[in-house]
Amino acid sequence: MTLFPRPLRFWTAVLVVLCMSAIDIGPAAAALAPSRVSGATSIASARDADMPLAQRVLENKIVAQKLRDYGVVPADAQAQLANMSDGDLHTLASASKGLPSGGDATGAVIGVLVVIILVIIVSQAHEP
Image (cartoon, rainbow, N blue to C red; front, side, top):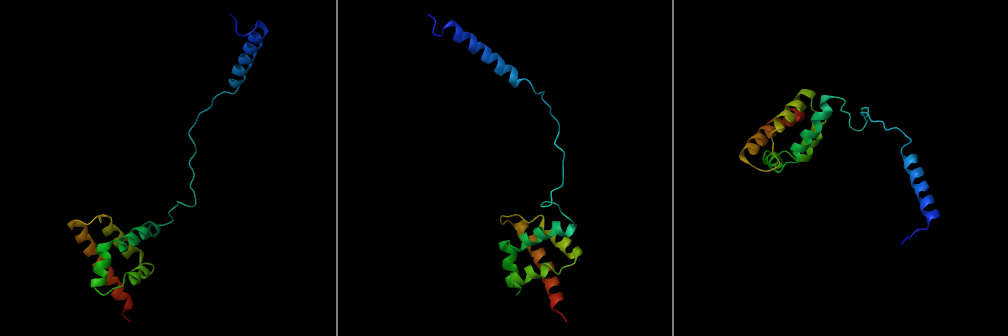
């Protein structure tokens, strides 16, 4: 009842022992990967961190509608972001952190505050 002849079993066993011993040659080494700063994700200044927040506020439906109600074109407000001082931009970004993506009453109040800040800044920029 032997399926494999004796020499075939012997060489199969030798081959299995050689394969198993060859796998176990290299020692295992584990360590933490070193961290490094990538150029694509580094934030050079607070302004670079605040600019995306402020741009996201201008994309909000409530803020865009309020800007139109006050006679400010959202594209002009977007262009004005580049001319804002670091302090004004940080104030705008800080005020917009509570602005939800949905549309509840708290978001509307914060949106109105952000719009008022933007209107003041844009109107000051257009004065001679």
